[in-house]
Length: 88
Image (tube, rainbow, N blue to C red; front, side):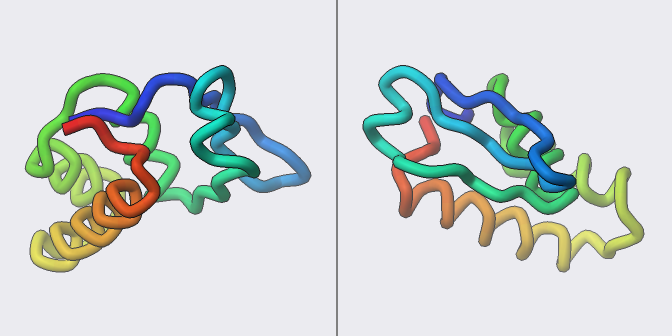
């Protein structure tokens, strides 16, 4: 799975945001605010990933147990699916 193409990640006023460009801008108007873990996942999803690789990236980067990381990753992926931002 991966993020639909056409997003750039930028720092704006101290916040990290994903900005849709091209066709993605027609699909989603506005910016996507990203906290630290969401930024990591969003960047990883620029290339093909599995849920397991995302979970392990979170546990490697943050002091979080595997079950919590899996729940957080699934919630993030569900949010991307709801907004049609994920290619599976």
